[in-house]
Length: 331
Image (tube, rainbow, N blue to C red):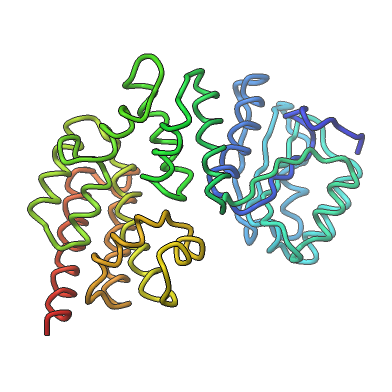
């Protein structure tokens, strides 16, 4: 396969390497968008590793009667079978025209031979690493504002990271919401109005009240959030983050908030808050709450007829689990 420069989005093979789901999805979306800009009828095939069996690649890349452009996406490529990897290595040497192969690979030792072969053949590569450090997430937020063509003060970016935490999807959604709703430079006061305080009833207020067992207040905050335009997906993300924080902290070693913050990837102030919220919670309770969040997430992403009802149901289940936890804590 001829060498391709890294800025050739429609190179025959693109490697998206890392474990950050948002960045992996964006790498795929970039290729698909470029392919459809070149040919609106581009056929996109999105496969998991177990769907790409020996012989499947040959079928997908065989010449089409209509000579259509095609994008073939293979997720979790590190899990492909040895026979399939052998076929891929052969394909790298003679890729099909009008076809772009996108391999999503977690990186690391597993399946490294596939990565090495694709790189040697000149594949385009997109890095998609986890943003594990607060400084990385801060840089991500700044980049999101720049990509939207908007100015945000350093204090505003830091406040957003402190309020939302490590979920890149939620950080990206928050930036999109702020840039859509606010004119001019986005400062710390704007972030505060959206993401702190009962008056704005942010998604995090909903989550905090739910995990504290305060169902009525959580439902009130939920309805206010939806009425003021907060995206349902932001709320499910906040609920998931709130429940997971309890699970993480309950299983972590004891220590100072600053030490735990480094270990768990949370700001120190959040450690103190979660400690207050987690009294009495058990692993079973956390599992019940996470299942409720997963069902709500499916409901707001098209799996149900009424996203608002899906969210209300999740809030009630989480709050019920929290009240049971608090009852145990007082016993």
